[in-house]
Image (cartoon, rainbow, N blue to C red):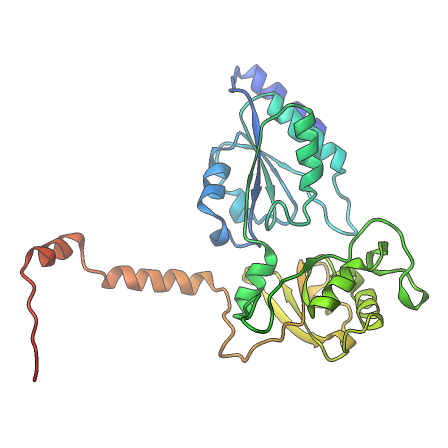
Length: 310
């Protein structure tokens, strides 16, 4: 069923049930890199309060489960797969908002980072619909955190590049082949000049990314690290170099992946894997060891004593 048809059916059902909603507004909300525990408090509250939840393909089921009262509509976009047209997504947001209530447009990572937010903001603005944006943790932040690798470093790296080789304007790339993503090499020049950065949506064009970076002078031994399924239980870290960059192994084909160029995998004892179960266990241990409020209050009322030794 097409997205507009699904919205129409939901609206008919609500009218039949006599559901009345206040004037609508749309909030673009960042769902973070994947784990429900990396949602902001505001994002979690808005999801729970939403009347309509319009979400991307990579939003996890645990996040969607927080939408306890919303009509949930999937408008996912995945490379190489059947995707919802942006025009239909815009129309869906406008239709939902015009029928009242809170519309949450849930986007993976941060809603303003490679998420076509500008197109949706413009469409909603032209329709006269109020819009708010709630930021989220972008995948690059979570990937660096998983590696315990700072994005900036005093005296060495003063900037951080976020780029994608998936651009739309066709152009010829170096070495007589199409540039990665078919849209020129400005993204690569920026990356080379900075000595590295985070590349989003690069896994399907990894060979072209390698050719483009090498042709622009990036050393072949520059570290390159894939972080697959960032922040999720199946997270994987794959270390390589720009000169050896190629497609992901078969077991990771089609999974969301971020490429960190110029970032080496730290020593195993320095890496911090995101382990929700371990965190929950630590919190339970801390709670059981914490004195009760009554004990704390009693200790605060007792006079303080100090022992001095010569």
